[in-house]
Image (tube, one colour):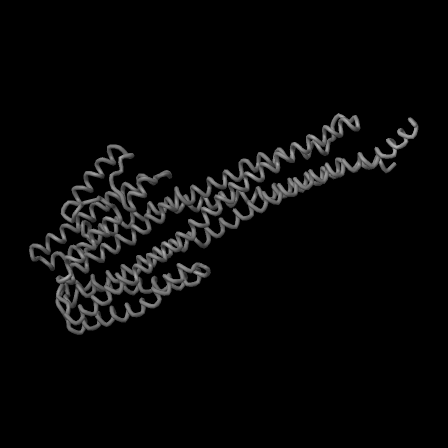
Length: 475
């Protein structure tokens, strides 16, 4: 009886031990494959998202704000040309305005073509583009007819031909009620697409971190357990291949624990530290251009002067909001807010797009550039009050000359100084954005092969490690 049991035990043991070893090894292999697949898939998705953000979505937002600026400057330059009339003292300024009008028209057409190509798959952007395409041709026709009619009448500066002014009003109304809102919708649609990609990718990275870490921890536990079982069963102190697989798995765990949080941080820096400021500042730049056009409309169309003055104020409030300020109190309120900020950089009393920027100053050189922009904005706002004071005194020609002057201290010169300072702040944030995109992409370019190669090495080492033990049962 005893001999029979011994024979059964000896016959069963070889079949049981190899089977268990194969199952344990298969479990480790499956965990390694799953961990590698999750990590590589998530990292590849993150790499693709950098291409989507850096090459398409962010440039689309910037291009859309550029379209908005080109459109509003187009109307502002046409107002200037009408404003100058045939007065020989404004001949040089008229030539400058005509050249800018032609440039804006070319820029708007180019931006529209680019936006049309890149809007595929974005229904909101396509809808906004359709509105701009439908109305821009009509605007150009109305503005062109107004300018031609006024030119033929040889009108003095500031006194357009009534029929030409009627056409210009129609063009301006079309710009303000149809074209600019559609361009703004295009900005929002493209920015929303980027925000959706950002939120989706951040969520995917968090999920990938959770699953990758869990799978790799299980893999390490499984490898240690197999190593312990082999030690007990075969009286081997250590299996070199399985030990190496365990070390690689621990390395992959460390890599995963750093890679995905790093990617989330790169995404956050690119989106919120950098690109939120790019969006706010490029929109501010377009709106200041719109305010500058409102000044020209104010001088051109006396019957609508109050409307354009209100528009200038509301646009200024969108750029730098001082709740409750009027056109007569805005400067004093702005000076007080700037003084408070200079006394304590955390005391930002203004809102609007500049409020967004001053609450989000992050990068080297950004604060200095933003402060220069703020100073230039104050100077430009003060110029506006001087223009309105000239008009109130009946000095229309003087107001026109000052409004359109590029000489030092002139309104257009200060507008240009503000624009140059603003572009510097945009440049700081754009550079930081591109650096985050580059660094995030570069990290993935180097780590994706490590994730894939590490998982493959673990699989290979598992197979190599158990092969000699299985071979013992085939002798």
